[in-house]
Image (cartoon, rainbow, N blue to C red; front, side, top):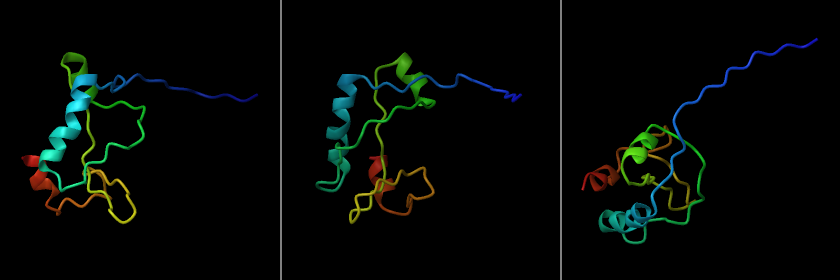
Length: 95
């Protein structure tokens, strides 16, 4: 007879963007990004993270900021080991 122990924990709630703020993200990014470098054609994800709590309290939207590989269109998040924080993107984010 087989036995298995299972632990199921509820962590952060689902990250659900608000519609108005979601629409404002690309326009705000376009003001500081290089021409044509704002990509809104990414697949939606189903996930959660600590920012979800802020979205429960206030309207907002989680946007991804990364240093995509222009040759292969690879998205590299800034908080990833694949990201390159030495690029001038960090200065653009601070604007």
